[in-house]
Length: 433
Image (cartoon, rainbow, N blue to C red):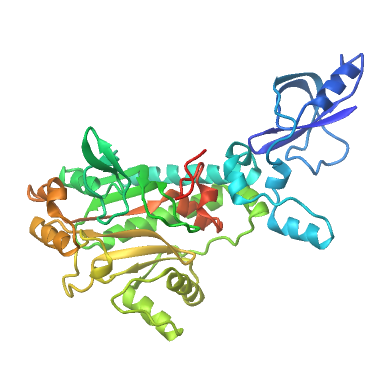
């Protein structure tokens, strides 16, 4: 007699082989089944039956009485990482250590080196199903609001954001780089009469940031839209979009969230039905009252963002909020200054669990002001002349935002590293697999 556990995506089922002439199962067949290495690919034919005792080790509460078993592809006998080890929670490892048992802890780099095996863990299967749902909901929401999906080029002549953090390359003898953002092109699409556009596509950042939340390549979720009266129209779209995403995940992905929670425990995200909006000055005042001094016209550092997240959660009971009206000096050149005080800008950031996930703003739609601001920010206006020119043909007031798909999933599930939400991460140290 032998027991074999089969796994398919997130489900497992127990198979039973009993040597019996009546069932056509020989002892050699039982021996063959027990000789199969873990993670081998098999085809099984049998009869589904209910076991006498409830099964604890599998997701399915039925057994398969095996009649035939074929090995399609035999895995090597010793795998570089053991799936049981890779699926354990930190709490399980610590509990075993307290009992004097030493369990293997699979490190981040080892997981990523053997990602094809690591992706088979229940938590990873769940994470990327959640990611798929976030992307689908993003598209679905924007299509329902009359946005048009676009695809902008990733090979460009200048840098999209300004600054040096671009991957440079040769393009048929001309210097070029990989796009840091679809920013300039989604704005040109608005000038092209599309009114509302969105894009899902790769974004490249050559920053040497070896942190838990930065990648050199990630999936950007971008949107741009005409503004009729006020740039809060963009904030309202963000509000509706994220509340819809959060609700959808909580209502339709319970199994996946529970699976992630078993290996990486987290508290469900707290958010309001109507998203909280605070001015940058209000945020700085809250930090000041809590004993953290911030340069009034400076940007928030990571520590200040986290602290503000904690303060907002305590005061307003939400971990998702919008901070708007940032100082102009800390925003990109194409950000529209405030009409009542040009030291500030019509811009905003959005935070989840004390970490920034979105940067957005009303954009400058006047070519003269755009040229002036580019020069003030140290950007050679001639390198973005086609971008600036597109506003001289008649351009409506408009605004938009960009968000990283991996970061949304990481923060919604309170994971400690963005590499967990990137299928094959690209960070400053990693180009394979």
